[in-house]
Picture 1 (cartoon, rainbow, N blue to C red):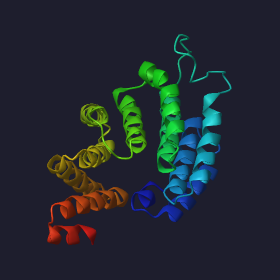
Picture 2: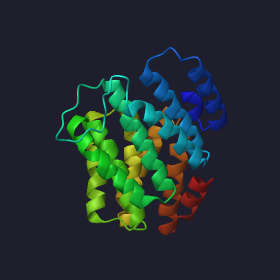
Picture 3: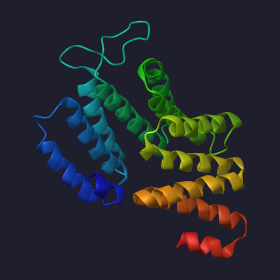
Picture 4: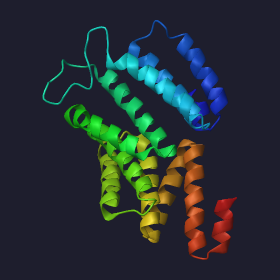
Length: 239
């Protein structure tokens, strides 16, 4: 399922992941939730945003309250009992995917409100990488709210995301962090640095076989070369 998703075979990935979920009824809770989240991602990337959100909300409902009564979004002033790290990781992943859908659907105010709600939990319990996840999602929503006029403040936030990724990983997240910085730099008017970041992201995406990320890099490199009047490079990247 993961390989099929990576090469953008979303229908096939969905089918395989559903088979895996059906066979994982006796597996631990985090494994089941992880499979539901991956199914939601295949729905999102086929533009079935409502279906994806329903899948995520259903998964989140299970994780928010476990049979032990541990609630993961307890108020900051109340230190909750210890939560298994894999539960917290999946709780955060689910929220990150919900924020992604808010971005794609233009539900910016809803997404920012969700960031504000979970930020204290992430600051209290999250790793450097998990905090970077939230910073990146907030920056993306802020960019959309500003109609892609990148502010200095938002650009600084995205630079911090890449720095955190380079420091703490995981390695699989670094190519997308380079892309995000290049994307923001492009709309900030820093074309040369944008090209460097997008090329770096493209190279790493080619190494991992991530077709979705490759397509995004080529799209915005095409815009960069067209701005520069570089016809041959524009045509090469557009094809």
